[in-house]
Image 1 (tube, rainbow, N blue to C red):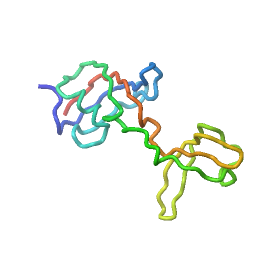
Image 2 (cartoon, one colour; image 1 turned 180 degrees about the vertical axis):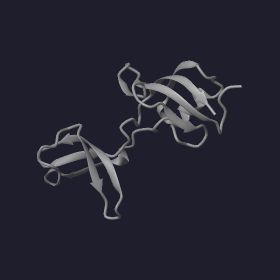
Image 3 (tube, helix red, strand yellow; image 1 turned 90 degrees about the horizontal axis):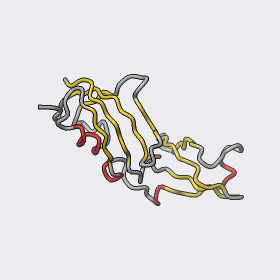
Image 4 (cartoon, rainbow, N blue to C red; image 1 turned 90 degrees about the vertical axis):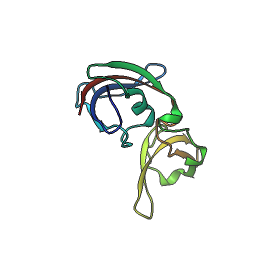
Length: 139
């Protein structure tokens, strides 16, 4: 019968960009465990494993719309460079603390002489993702 919504599954996976660069893998550590249909993983990942049996291996591509969504320009903003740490570099991740206590991570996208552009998009937003999965357990 294979995997269906509501099943608890354990899988090993490797996540890659379309050029083959690996961004995450469960091999060498604990497998990923989640309940199918509970929104614990990206929708495109869940859709692709439905119907698979224990021991199955599958490679698939999840379009960004079913992964972390598009990269949104409204999540990029500029700040005065002097409010950032002195040793900051393009590509660095920084924590932003809001007055309401929320904390979110931004990536430094550009550094000018006086202004920096920060990007609060998820690092995988706007990217199609390739996964290789192995189904270890279904309960």
